[in-house]
Image (cartoon, rainbow, N blue to C red; front, side, top):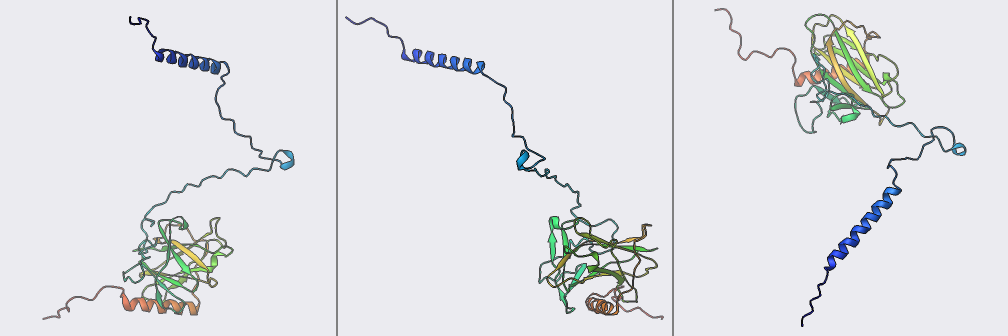
Length: 274
């Protein structure tokens, strides 16, 4: 005869045991449950190692700045006041707003920095020891103008080591320096140079050189030549020293020989009276 005894499924017993174990675990957890929260170790902000720990420095605060990625100011009469288009690959021959000359008065390529090292925009110029910058601009139709330059000088140097100046591009006898607004740079190392001129009736150019020690460099940015806005400069202009004026004139002649200023000659000779 067959055995008619029925066998209970083993899986039923296993599931029951697992369920009871979970219920017991949940009951134990609920009995000793506490609210979960973060409890960081307290930091001592005062005192020393003998009175609760070393002092903790203040938390670092981020500095958020707003910058125009295209740099230049509206109405600027300089061809390229923010150096966005004058820093080019060596070997190229583009017509650019700024030219650089080395200590021997020879044309050289203008080096630049990018990003956060610059005061505004995306680029700024590196003024190396012994080098000079020649920048092209124009003049306001009526009234005077304000020339402005920003430069970051080497640590420990006064603003006077960078020397901007304004002059007529056609070398007709107008050359004045652009003095610094303050002798010492601001907390970021930048110096502002500013001057107002009156009666400028011809195209204006700018010359920037420096009295840096060998191996030193300065950054130049935010150069502007604007119609007079009614605010007087802190310091008045001064004439250039003779040797500096001679160097500016030599560079200007080099530029004039390769890029004439003024109206181009007519394509055809003018016809005389019949």
